[in-house]
Image 1 (tube, helix red, strand yellow):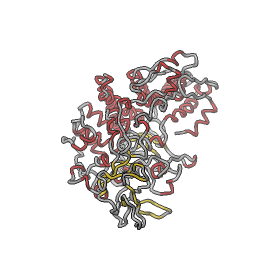
Image 2 (spheres, rainbow, N blue to C red):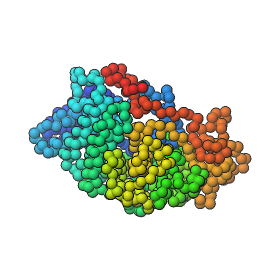
Image 3 (cartoon, rainbow, N blue to C red):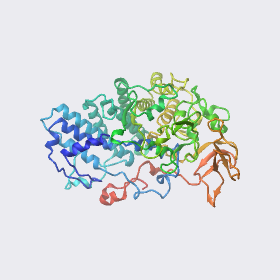
Image 4 (cartoon, rainbow, N blue to C red):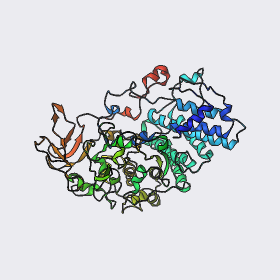
Length: 590
């Protein structure tokens, strides 16, 4: 974001980088050149935007999630494969840069409100920095000044989560009160309402984390954070001027948010934008279509089953839903499903020709092949070619933050439901259950995802959050704050295969697409992919099988154990950083 403006800043000031708080740079240019004018402050704060996630961080952000089947089990979830030596993320360069700015932005030649505006930007980015650190490591050192090499605090221990998060909240409150920008049509500049949107994200996370992670003994403070989440989201909803994108109708309006070249400004608050003139592209197609480059992530059937019928009823209420073939199970569903995975009449452009594009098993392991972030022209499939902007924050998330926080506070009304979950489902073409809170619990959703939740609206809000924000990088953090790590043990299951050696026409275009076999026939049908589901291949265990041996759900990597451990709710402090500063200690279990 704005990376090509940084050269202007470097011309004014050079600050050497560091990788941790034990290595502190020295300013090498005159502070006056930067801090004596608004232009200097503006140029300096451009450097903060490097701390926002890049396109890959977002569109690949759910590569480790309960609903994501992938090529390999992440090392983080494999016993003995991940520990302090493999851990990362204990970097502090960005913080030193921010604190240096705050400490030196005191020149009286610049009007107070101008200085406060840019301090607000700095404190927003400091809050962003620390929120990511706390999510990953829990207790971290709170550093509110630019440390020098002689500062004894460099080798202090970590501060309590409560102190750090209170400081994050104070930074966000300051930013919201002092940032003057209220709108930016490029959707790449921090505005007042982005601050409040992010505050709703932070406070919802912290409030629910404290409520459900009971070992911290902070449940009695969760209400404060949830109330702050409601207040921040409400401010965006009432004052921000945003709305859900409905252009193109229920069959197109959702996916348009993720494949548009420029951010859809009605709904997108903040975006990682592309710039072909500066050769700034992203790799979404390459990552989501290649059999070798990305992780070949696909949805699992357990999660796909949570997409509602178009009338608002649960799909799992259908008779014999477990044995419905792919072609049938995807019909009459929430329109977001057809904008998230390949199904039905989905087509792609190949050399200028539009062609049917069913799921391909050179990529997918489950049959539920994602299209949310990919452009439909195969030109984009190789390399960094994508010119679609990648959303970092959008209005739908704010609505969900509001609804969930109110449900957790037991203050959710029918009107709240209608303007949040009801509005999202209406945009997706769903016709029922839009105006009043649900009263009945879906037993499938409760049993498979949230057995400890007995509140019907809260269950449905969690369903809605999973579906609306799928593959946008929220899922693992949600699992952490809900204390539902066991979801990471879910079987990586795929669509139902009625029999071996039976051709399947996945998009019903009259052409067979795939056959699952144990003994490959000598004569093979042209244009059909043959997938081996025998127990072993060349003496090695075959990770792709059928649940009932000769029929049933596809399964992937059931031969590799995934067992959730309580310690996984936090990452370990990297070993190299503990060697530099033993006072940091280590997170429990690591």
